[in-house]
Amino acid sequence: MAWEQLVEVIRRARQDHDDYVSQPPRACPHDGEPLKVRPDGGLFCPSDGWRPEMDPSWH
Ligand SMILES: [Zn+2]
Image 1 (cartoon, rainbow, N blue to C red):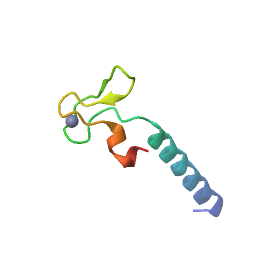
Image 2 (cartoon, rainbow, N blue to C red):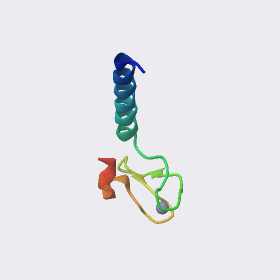
Image 3 (cartoon, helix red, strand yellow):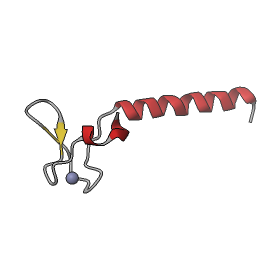
C-alpha cells in the first residue's frame, strides 16, 4: 500500500469515528431498548431509565 493511500485510510477512519461519536446513541447499551425522547429533549431508556449523559463515553 502506498503511503498516500495509508494516510487516506487513516483520515477516513478518523472522520468515521468523529461522525460516530457525534451521533447520539439510538439504543440502550444495557438492553438494546430503543431510546425515547424525554420532555426536556434528552434521550432515555424506557426499560431501565439509562440516559446517554450518564455514560461519559458518549461525550
Ligand atoms: Zn436500558
